[in-house]
Length: 316
Image 1 (cartoon, one colour):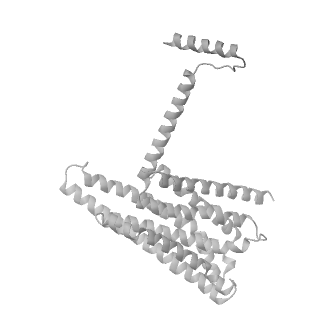
Image 2 (cartoon, rainbow, N blue to C red):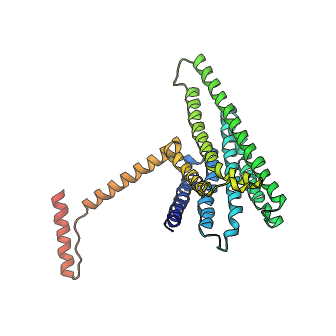
Image 3 (cartoon, helix red, strand yellow):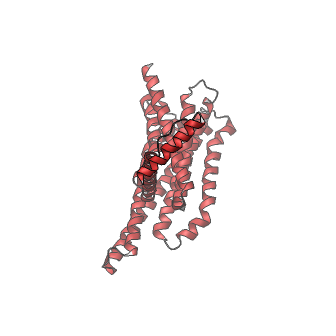
């Protein structure tokens, strides 16, 4: 009973943190002009999938098997997994274009930005809800084929494409850096700085990809095992651990943005500095204010006015 309660408290707490942290990311990008880039737009889409993980999937799971919404858990797992993979693909595509075709980046991404996000979310929803056509009978052959195809076409192949893209991005960055070193003695040149910045951003996104892949591996494994009708190979401990790994992934992303991604760090530092200055100013203004007393009568009011005059006369 203690283990069940602890499990509930930990997951519920993580769920709240996931939603709060990712909402902060979304609000920061929407309200801050310097953060409103196409790259961060894709990150907002990824943050929305994390919000759904923390705000929908975990509450449904924690509501228990006898809850009226318990039947939606399988659909939600598929939806947030597919949306996450899709958005990771978009982030990777953004980095690939930025590094391999820097001069065409803005035009290319601007042209496809909205369409690609809509397509990813639409496909994720449609594929996740597909089992409704056969009433989600887990024992029939078509559902097992569906699970196998889901893992193959919408998870394994995209993962392979993502890692291939990052391999090519790495090669391209190294090639450009070698050219810059060979033809320019000025290490502080504009091209050199730009390539260093792109390399740093790419490392952040590669970290996001790695965390996402590793965190979803237990669920991917269990789904594949279920599609092969080998449920005995899926221990209860792994099922419980999979929930924590998914939660940690959704929580890790906003922390990576805040502490590693330079534009987010810069803006958070500026905001903290502004808040610090505002706090100091408010405290200073409060210290400068003369002491006030309630004036209940005309006599008290006049007396209070005299005190104010004397106070400011002494200060000047």
